[in-house]
Length: 147
Image 1 (tube, rainbow, N blue to C red):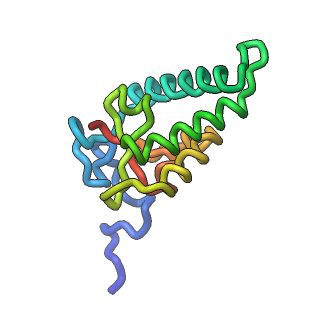
Image 2 (image 1 turned 45 degrees about the vertical axis):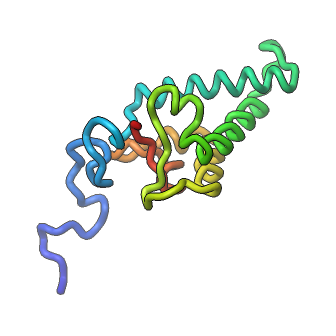
């Protein structure tokens, strides 16, 4: 039976969400609601500062000989280690966010690797959908929520 004119046949025909995460079955506010941009940015700044401090300490860098590749690699490594162990990066947890898989259960080791490598490329994080999920989260099947 063909779809009626009122039924969407593609994702682009869906009506806009009333709040980020509505289409994912997540609440508008409170625990398990989508982590909003302010918390995300603050968590990112905390994580990047930690990555810089660790890279500067381990590799004996100074601000004069800053190496963005080493700092970004350190950032990705920290994400891969902490997302499956404490439910998010140190910055995420400090601002009250955590990374969960859409399918439920434990995030496992592969999702943080995919998510973090893509995040290290920066561009996926700049491409968001109406649920405020970056491309890196969509590919990894994860969502950043309050909690």
